[in-house]
Amino acid sequence: MGTEPVDFCREIEAYLCRKNDGHLIRITGPSFDLVSAWAQQGVPLKVACAGIDRYFGRYYAKGPRRRPIKIDFCEADVLDVFDEWRRATGVTALARSANEEGGTGEAAPQEAGRPTSSLPSHLERALRRLTSARATGALDASFDDFLDRVAREFDRARGVRGDKRQALVDRLAALDRELLNTARAALDADARSALAREADDELAAFRAGMSTEAFGRAREAAIDRLVRERMKLPTLAYY
Image (cartoon, rainbow, N blue to C red; front, side, top):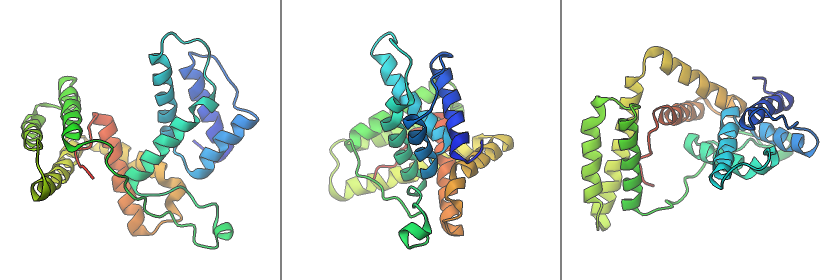
């Protein structure tokens, strides 16, 4: 896909058409300006599509579809998914330009937000997602021991306070890293290369404004996110 807003808009228009079962709604006028702004901010195409999917999922959950969906209705979900992507990769939205801001325009680290659920609830959801991934075949039998250890951590999470709670949070971060390393190792060389290329494409709009070290961290985080998505893995770490 091209990086110009017009190319981005064409890709989004085609994706929206598929989501609307072939009903074409042109992205023109204010809608074109809206989607062009996503491109200018560096929203990766796949991230924008995930936001569109999120809106459609909510819309279908309300009952039979009544009308084709316009791209404008998806804006909040696209920006929410973009924000989640930025937090995962550690980059912020693109600066307008070095001239406008009077600076370098470098993409800066994105601070992590506060947890939105309790530790036991977080672990319960994570274990449920891991079990589902195992049941559907996304994870093979080599993950069974890992699932048992996560289940034990869930039992330990009940009522922990103070130093014990922090120790549990530290163990979860280590387990999360182990999960990702194991998942990466389970992929063949072609799959790993494809995910690395996809990560590079997602970060392309930010590359020029990042140091080599910052880009390396963001690239690894982007690959981790893609591995989670591919294998339907939860985030075990609790911040």
